Image 1 (cartoon, rainbow, N blue to C red):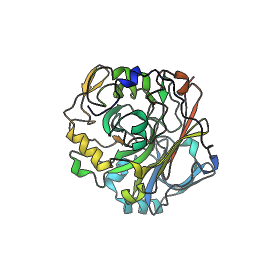
Image 2 (cartoon, rainbow, N blue to C red):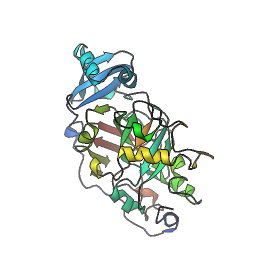
Image 3 (cartoon, helix red, strand yellow):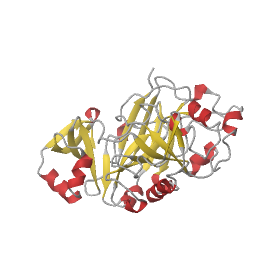
Length: 338
């Protein structure tokens, strides 16, 4: 069993201080650093209207309107990057308020997620090495409300999006785009599930992280020309009520995307418990269908630590606002429901 503290989570009674604000949110730069068109394709949608984003500023995106109905994943199934750029060159330009954007693509409801994939986060929660668990929930738009919970926690994450189906770990190159997401968690439900024995990630995680509204994503689907080069410039950040809680370079991830996919296929026979039954870690029996996500883990700075489970006031409360941002991927702004 790859963990130091499964039982310690439920028996430590020490009182510890929760994370506090260290730096104020700079609204002026929140939407900055959207990648240049030469580096990546950046898609967004207003309703079913498909946009190729060229720049962001003053609360708007400037974009080419590619289609009134087509989904970007469907578009990428018939056009390569050069074809998309040619289509954009011949398309009308529009200026669209960011607030009018929705989900950047139609996405699935079963995903693979990595826990403890940043060393600092593993250290703060008492887990020695990365592990996987299923995230069984349909994504919601980037400004969606998040349901309240007894011990509600945040996790800013870079999510990889399968653009085409994968039936083996060898098919990763060229088959993934990216979105920004927040892996919200009911830590109380997660901890109760871990009372029963099992491999790390197989109990508690799917139930604690699987409520509707616990996976806001977007508003951009980004498909880089060179995934590794793009990731080298990405910084993940998260604020609660204007105070900085998380910040880390994406390059600090321990396991990269190909390794996460490889481990998913290698562990496909392991039973993961969710909603009273068991399932494979893979979204489908054949592997990863198009539109499924791989959540790549969160940096240090979450609320949960070994000493905070009994201190409910430290966790997110109704009315709290959580803002997440990543270089080139935009921002999320989510308020906890009353």
